[in-house]
Length: 400
Image (cartoon, rainbow, N blue to C red):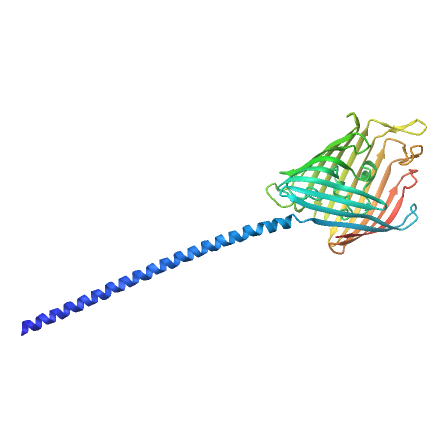
């Protein structure tokens, strides 16, 4: 009996051991199943993230045409100005100045069409009309600071000539005062503008512009010229806009005017400099015109070589939203008389001009600005009938 009890006792122990082994093996299999399920779950999460990324890529690809359509939209802007002034010539104190309408349209990724239509009194003209091929830079301003962003441009059409530095301020919203300098009025005939081809751009610390146009002085012939600007203080590794870095600028300009047989008529040189010191801007410009002709008076006598030169210095203090302007300029002709623009049988004696200008500007908002200016010509004896020795002018410029 004892051996039978021992046998059954051993049998029961073996059964317990087998049972425990089964439990352990079952637990291990269950744990392996959990690990497998966790791995599958993580793999599914990765697949879901990949699907989300593909979905976002597809959505962005569908948005690109819409964004491109927005960039291709017609951009329209413009301005008009209204002045009140003391006068001793026109007989009336109020003048509606120029109304300008600027339009820009991105025809394709690298092509833009820009135009500026100007209404002034009873005259209407197309001041700018160009088709522009550009690389990198998609900003193609019709007028003003054409070097505001880095890039390369090739243009065909009508455009302002980048000679000297005052070309940046032809439009009323861009000019801090009201009246153009003597160098622009007398030597550049209120600002050079021509039909032809030009290329311009920015490379490293240099701005450059080259152009070939119809004659800027006569009905026949052509003009060719260039301007190079140097920015010694510019960070050449910074891609920010130039107007955010412009602290010190030196420019050199050259222009040659020729008749229809390519014979030289006029050659012009200019040196300009812009310097920013805190809230003060200093601008200097010198222009010289050398002509092969003489001024022939109605009696067939000579009034001297048709050469002239001049300079202007401008100081602007910016205390946003107001600014204050101080300018001085000189114009020196080598001739003693000039012909009337409308009647060549009439001539007027002229002499050196000196002009002092004081002014202020207040930016009411981004659409409206007010200016007040007083200029006075010093030591002048010119006999031109419409010449104003002094003038006080108030101007309102409204942009849209």
